[in-house]
Length: 165
Picture 1 (tube, one colour):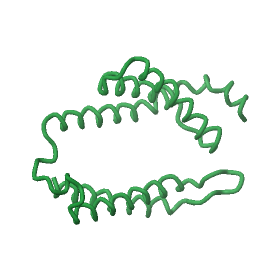
Picture 2 (cartoon, one colour):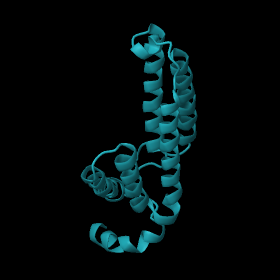
Picture 3 (cartoon, helix red, strand yellow):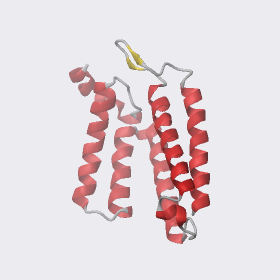
Picture 4 (cartoon, helix red, strand yellow):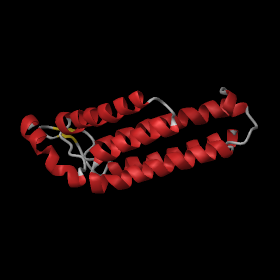
């Protein structure tokens, strides 16, 4: 498992360096009257991932965590299955963004993942499926003025645009 920590943290560190380089081609600071620059979120998130990757490498090298001292395989069949389901559902959600938009794909993802993969109650799944799109809309579109893809649901948002903007 220790080798897997080094490999994954190293791969994430390299990926975050690449993303920081590419996102720095756009403004990464706050633009007056416009909000964050086009490269701001990718840059700062990549920086956070880079810092976390470095911490993981240091902790693995020092053998601080039980995982870094373990000789067990990194992923057994159950973990591979969970990874495949998670990656597949995230890919499906991202693919749906273009057609039905973020605000339909996101609740569908939460219902599937929280209820059927996580086996939480319907109440929890529906609460997240309702709260997350509202929070996402308020944060990105109202607060930061960053429009997210809405696909065929775009006309449903015209009254909200008229109210908030």
